[in-house]
Amino acid sequence: MRLTLPNPDSTLKIGTRGSPLALAQAFETRRRLMKAFDRDEESFEIVVITTSGDNAQLIAKDKPLKELGGKGLFTKEIEEALVAGRIDIAVHSMKDMPVAQPEGLLLDTYLPREDTRDAFVSPNHTSLADLPEGAVVGTSSLRRRSQLLNYRNDLKVVEFRGNVQTRLKKLSDNVADCTFLAMAGLNRLNMAHVATTAIEPEDMLPAVAQGAIGIERRASDMNTAALLEALHDTPTSQRLAAERAFLAALDGSCETPIAALAELDGTTLRLRGEVLRPDGSESLKDDTSAAVEDGAELGKAMAAKLLAQGGVGFFDWRNQG
Image (tube, rainbow, N blue to C red; front, side):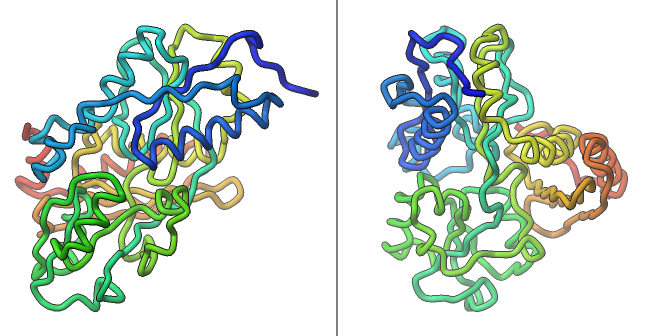
């Protein structure tokens, strides 16, 4: 049966940031909509929205994200446009999204998930283990920083803000010996060759929802809800339900040293989770499985288990600004 747009005479406006990766994700969303509804590009308008996080002077400060205003720097203006009706949907990297959305908005459509692994990127070294003592690592991710220091506390970690191209430029300028990027982003930019090697989750568990694209809409917009059903990938949704429940029970934001990966094997869901002290001095991990439909409960239970295992002061970062 051929699908039709809920309102075939109107143009669906797709909101996104203007970075190359954000645009690649918006273009992927548009391609999937064009295919699902057999429509041309003119039916789907890409609307680029400049966010506070796109401020070049802000990015250049190379400060931790919390000090600059948190992940909301990259979503606030887009979500405001969505609430105001200037766009119909917003396309996001799910690893950058907190578990709670602004009132009136829903984030309940996911595209098929890409490669979840981190990429080790270095012009002179083949792997993390190959780095010399005291090597400088550039990353803006608190999760990666904590994991790196837990693995090797001799490393010097410096802030590396900016999009993929900005960080690669800093690497070529010898600001650091190596950096880490998401394989998913490199794949979507047709830049997989940039990765020196992909790091298996056994060595570095990825961020919650890494590799997944989410589409946000107004909760009251049922026409768009019906349209997005054609794009929604159920396996990705099942995996993210477990990972984001784990995140929500531990902290609820994406600005903390938390990692998780859910994988499906038939009707079974395996969840691996990790939470660390920001300085990397201690790591708590768990690995367990449950029925797919119990994924969210599994995430909550794993978080509760790790919360109980944390010693005095382990979770103090949850109360910091």
